[in-house]
Figure 1 (tube, rainbow, N blue to C red):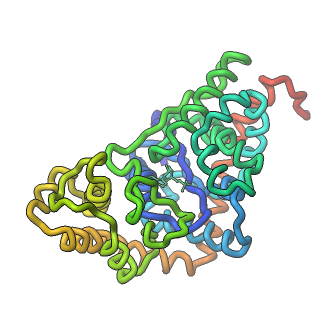
Figure 2: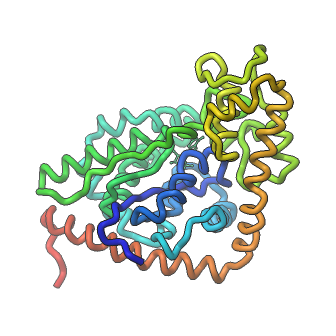
Length: 335
Ligand code: AMP
């Protein structure tokens, strides 16, 4: 595979639960589109996942399911570096050094930390606070120039850039400064019941979130019960019509048409019919993906082989950066 002269990109998803329409729209759709043009490093971020409480058996299964879903959606391990984060210890090693180059105040400003602390006040652990620094290590280890993420991760990529800049200034140029790549459409898929909040994997109200693994009846039921408004017009206007705008975004993402074409297509259509057609577009998109995912998830030997090859490749790249960093900070290197 020719990777020379290609820009490096890095991205990851946490296997805290099954992937959602939001994971695809905000991140994975871009990952797949960028595979040919870029030197892509993608990972299943299992170390990030344990900032919340998970049952180990579910977590283990989710990690493999997420990997199978990446592959089923079209992530090609021949074209990119695909691995599980905990298989490459350099992530944790660099995170410690970056911790010592991150100010408490700047980490405390992270919006996601504040939100998650409120969601589960009994488990505001140090890992949750430190999450963005581990994410900076993920990105900086691979000298990634671009990081395709949804809107919610933009602030974390900016922090990674600030940490890199500080380290480069303090020691000498070491890290490439990363930039986020946010999709124009789908950067924030909202809940179907609460169309102003992000659709999230760890959702109490199951009708708020559509999972990529949901069966057709479940998908249709969730879309039929989606919250709209008291108007009758299908028009994109996030402030005044968040429910309809969110459904238009989902349709645009999964049917592969622009928002304005979708508006034209549904001009004069009733809300019930519109919601049904958005659900059908998602079901049609998911049908072949789910069939492939089921096949891959059953092939444990294949998944193990993908993880092993990916981790070896990632570890080689990561070690190059980490050795440089160890030298720069003044650690005595063993001979
Ligand atoms: P996470 O599930 O938090 O590990 O996020 C994985 C990736 O999916 C990140 O790039 C997020 O920004 C993106 N993402 C997660 N949920 C959504 C959503 N509802 N809409 C758009 N992007 C999302």
